[in-house]
Image (cartoon, rainbow, N blue to C red; front, side):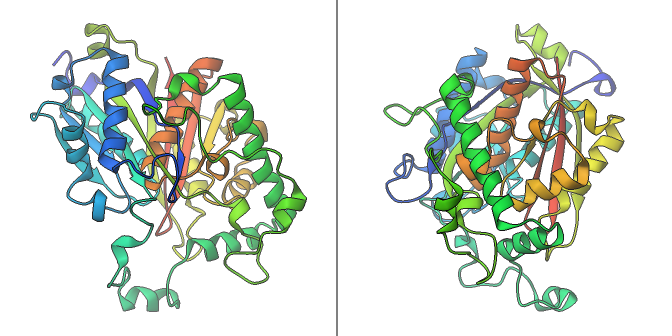
Length: 385
């Protein structure tokens, strides 16, 4: 060890992701096994960092639906598929949509504690090959006493998104305007080359995120039927896309990075969790943001960029209304409505976007938060170094 556990920090020295493919038959990554999808970013990560993967103490890998092609510890299968030494261990984490953001928290904590010197964190999901909810086939996710506690027959993110829209008086027009913003910003970031450095396209595959649509209008979105309530405001056009993708980051200490000739990009400044009503389900990012700011001693205006996962348009809009953040700092490169939401990979995809955006624009602090099933949320504050 280069220092005592009590003086160790956690820094990210490299972050990379695949372009996100549409999660359906014929999507760009639909023929790629999820372990191979993740293996591609692992190989790209160590190539860019110019390290031997043998120094990696553990890989912490997010995956939301660990069945079928994603069963049997996807993290370990990903390490082996990447051709890394058998000595490199791995585990798979499921905190619903925040799984790979939680992998960052676990990896950073392990480095700070001295359990790891180098760890790789990230995640992947192939929603083409392993449809959402496949792990619930033949069983019930919630025992009856949990359903009785809340007086419901089940929990639905879509219904929660409608409840959020109603609570914050978000009209369908407002939600659709936000969805169009997401596509416009993602298209502009693609065209300007702002995403190029973070992407590791698969050989012969797409070079940019597949889900971005151009030329949409309020009129075209108005033709889409509500998805969860007959008179509702949430539909496919203002919700995140089903997707395939992966992302990974290399975490170590500042001292160890410099000793190995690596340049720290950001420090994991603050990492928190928050829980809220599991019926509404999608409001915990508000609480997580407040908790992160309180713990860090920073104000909302100190944060120069926010990544708030666009599970549904109502989520970031409600978050914006509650936090008072500057709207132009929210999801400045677009979000999951345009790019897609590959579940277990999304936390790493978002954080890779945030890290590169901070570095490219000299932004000192960035904050990422994601709503998660069960009414939970992660929030992470990064500091540019």
